[in-house]
Amino acid sequence: MRIAEIALIAALAFAPAAFADETPSAMLEKGIFQQETAGDLDAAIKVYKQIVDEANANRRFVAEAQFRIGECYQKQGKKAEAEAAFRQVIASYSDQADLVAKAHKELGEAEPARAPKIVSTSPAAFATDVSPALDKITVTFDQKMKDGSWSWTGSGDTFPKVEKPHYDAAKMTCTLPCKLQPGKVYWVGINAPSFKNFRSAEGVPAPWYIILFATQSADGKPTPIPADLLEQARPVNAQSVILSADDKERKAAESLAAEGWQLWFQRKLPEAEAKFGEAVKLDPANVKAWNGMGWAQMNQGKTLNARESFEKCVALDPKAAAAMNGLGWIANGEGKTDEAMGWWKKAIEASPNTTAALSGLASTSMELKQYDQAAQYYQMWLKAEPDNADAKLGLDKAKTAAQSIKAATQAVEHWLAALDAGKYADCWEQSAAAIRKTVPKANLEAALKTALQPFGKVVSRKLLTADYETSLPGAPNGEYVIMQYQTDFESKKGAIETITPTNEADGQWRVSGYYVK
Image (tube, rainbow, N blue to C red; front, side):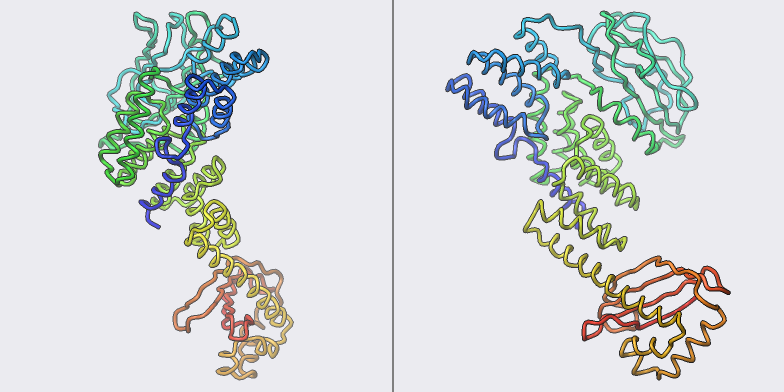
C-alpha cells in the first residue's frame, strides 16, 4: 500500500467535520435550531448530549453544547440539572474562557482570576530550523503579567547563554536575550513545577510550557530533536495549549480548514496546504488544520514539513490519532521500524479504529515474521472494516504462517529428539520424501553420525527464528519454514542449527534440510 493511499485511509477514518454526515458542527446547528427556533428543549438537549459524548469532536463545539444543555435545563426550570451542566463547563473546559465566564455568570458567581495563557512563542516549540543568529526568545501572554517576575527554566548544555529578561510596555510579552550556537538543541521552560514566577497581574501562575527547539547547522540544515526530549516535552505542552484566536478567528480558521480538506480530497495538494496554512495563522491551536497540513505536505513528499505539522498537532492534542499515524508512516519510510510501530500503537490507543495505523502494524509485523501479532492487528482492522479485502487476505496469510510454524515446529522437535538420541534411522523415516528418494537410509545415518559425533551431547538448544516461506532458491514452490536454533553441545558452544521442514502432499510437515555451523 502506497503512502498516498494510506493517507486517504487516515483522512477517511478521521474525516474533518465538514464532510461527515452528522458532524459536531452540523449537530450544534441542529441543536440550536431546536432550542431557539423550534422551542423543543428536550430535542435540543438530546442533540447536545450526542455532541458531548463524541470523543473526537472539537472541544469548542463540545463546550458550547455542554453550556447550552445548562441553558435548556434552566428554561425548563430544572435548577439542579442546569447548575450541574454549567459547573461541568467550568470544570472540564477551562480553555474556553468565554464560555467559562458565561457559566459563572449564569451561576451568579464572580469569575475567579484566570491563569495566563500563551499566545505565542519565538521560536515555536519543536522548531528544528531556528537561525543561530536569533538573539532573543520571547513569550506573549493573553493578559497583563506581573512586572519583574518570571521563571525562564532550564539548565545544563540545553539552556542557552542568556541576559536579564524584560517585559514590553504592555507587560504581556517577556523577552529573554540570548546567544545561540549552530546545530544545537535547546530546552527553555516557561515556569516549571517548582518555579512559577510567570504570573498574571492578579498573581495567578502561568502553566508550565517548554520551548524545545533546535538551531540550523553551520550549513543551514535543520537539526533533529532527540526523541526522548520530544517525548518529555509534548505531554507538558499539551496541557498548556497556545491560544491566539478569538471566536471570529476560530470560526474563520474552521472554515479554511474545511476548504483545505475539500481540496485535499480533490488531490489539489499545494492548494490544500495553502488553505491549512491560512487556518493555522488565524488559529494556531486548530488541530484539524495542523493534521491536514501534515497530510498535504506528506503527499507532496515534504516529509520534514509534514513531521513538524504532525508534531504540532500531537502537541495540541495528545490523542490526535491521524497525526500519530502520519508520523508512523514517515518513520517507516525512513527505515525506523521501532519508531514507526511506536507511533502506530499510540494511534490505535487513542482511537482503536485507526485503520491506516492498523495496516502499518499488521504489514510490518508480517515483515518482521511476527505472525501471531500480525494476525491480531489484521483482526482489529477487520473489526473496523469488515469488508476490507487487504485485511482479509493479510489475516489469512498471517494465520497460515502462524499455524504452519506451529505444525512445523512440532515435526522438527520430534526429528531433533531422534537426532539427539542418536536414532539416525528414525531421522531418515521422518525426513521429506525428496530426502528419502535421493539419500539411502544408511548414507544419512553415516553422514549425521560423522558430522555430530565430535560435538558430543546437546547441552541446550534455543529457537532463534522461524520464517515461513512459499519459495526457496533451487526448490519447487511449496510451504517451508526456515528454523534456526542456537545450540550448545558438550564440545561446541554456540553452534547454529538450520533446519528446513516442508509441508508435503499428505499435509504432514517433514524435515527437508539440516545444516549445523
